[in-house]
Amino acid sequence: MATNAAGVLRRLQAQKRDLTSKPIDGVAISWPENNLRKWLVQIDGPAGSLYENDIFDVQIIFGPDYPEKPPRLMMSTPIVHPNVDTNGAVCIDVLRSQYNKVVTVRQIIEGIINALEHPHEKGRLNAQV
Image: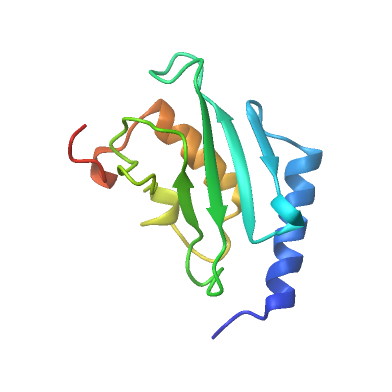
């Protein structure tokens, strides 16, 4: 059963308000052309990780079947990481085995940060790492 478009936009607007009022440390978010279905997220490499002092640009794209299906993540910053393929597609547990319709954008961003801190072998997309 498809969720109506207005309801999806209300949900994304509420999550935007939440992340604007209570931001995640080391994360900046923008919405090009005020499009709530495409989020640009800039993440500082976590302290103490291999990626410390790096900055990563990730697009979160909410397709027409969201929230029944998870959004798509694309990292535009080149990175050597087992959970990011050579085209920038990102595989994290919160969008695979743990995904359900109530997963929030905050949880997705925290999942990306967690993957930068602790790469997940079982979600390997990049066989060369």
